[in-house]
Amino acid sequence: MIPFNAPPVVGTELDYMQAAMSSGKLCGDGGFTRRCQQWLEHYSGSKKVLLTPSCTASLEMAAILLDIQPGDEVIMPSYTFVSTANAFVLRGATIVYVDVRPDTLNIDETKIEAAITDKTRAIVPVHYAGVACEMDAIMALAEKHDLWVVEDAAQGVMARYKGRPLGAIGHIGCFSFHETKNYTSGGEGGATLINDPALVERAEIIREKGTNRSQFFRGQADKYTWRDIGSSYLMADIQAAYLWGQLEAAGRINERRLRLWHNYYDAFRPLAEAGRVTLPTLPTLPAHCQHNAHLFYLKLRDIDDRAAFIRDMKDAEILTVFHYIPLHTSPAGLRFGRFSGEDRYTTRESERLVRLPLFYNLSDVNQRTVINTILSFFS
Ligand SMILES: *Cc1c(COP(=O)(O)O)cnc(C)c1O
Image (cartoon, rainbow, N blue to C red; front, top):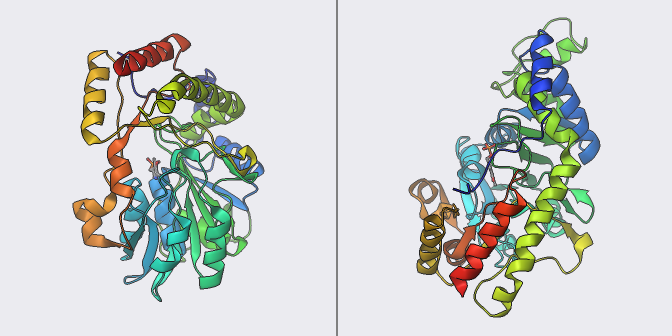
């Protein structure tokens, strides 16, 4: 069986985890956490990067940090993972869904302004597949209407928009190091990028159970006390040790993923030219948007064609999957949000899309098998 995903392993992880165990400090903010945070700050240019237990936790931190209150509205695509919305619903917000663009499946930046009301507080662009949303347009809208921007860059580590790393453009960015993402901290993990310097101090407090413990450890306070609401949003250092091995190999991981992505793209181009499938749209100007090969998808004619495809692949011992059920068509998504304007592409495109195996340790031989099986499915 060729799996859909396998967690990335580069080979140094065990040694670093062993080193973390020998250091006598396994909780959060140990040596490996510090190294990872510095690496991420240097790479992204963000004012402060904080490792967290997950991207879900990072999004929750962001909602607390921005003081999202009951009755506030938060704009995002419906085509995303539940955590994007859940984090804000936990603070009492109403989610306002905006349609996606058919080419990237990212929020359609031209439809955001019509969704803004006097209750809107934030826009949450999701960089689907590690392909950047149109951040210049989104940041301009946010400035005009005095809104916060939280980038859900769960899939966007090592991807760029006009040269700028995703996650470092909005006021706050959120990364995921879940095992299905490009880099992992041993299964679960995330990071919050605090790009607005005015938010840094309170972010550290929220992450440390509402205390100023971080300041205390830096010698900036003589005792630490309860200052604000907060939770435990720290990553254990043994997980940061795993992540450190991956970050050191980040360039190699990114290159391998891009190689695999382009192998698929080149192999299926004739199918796309014959009108049998739709491929992801590559930006006409590569400098505009450098993606990170987070995932490779094909779009088939409709939901029935997709079901037949997934069944045939499974019979050939290849696992392919789809996502997401649009949030505005799910029970909680309906209860906590509303769709602004027309759902022209969100549902239609979500029903056509199927994801192929793409992970760092996928072998050339196995990818060849996937490609040949798909080509014979269509012949
Ligand atoms: C994976 C993902 C998340 C959640 O990440 P976790 O680290 O598993 O909490 C959130 N948003 C998007 C778009 C994702 O792909």
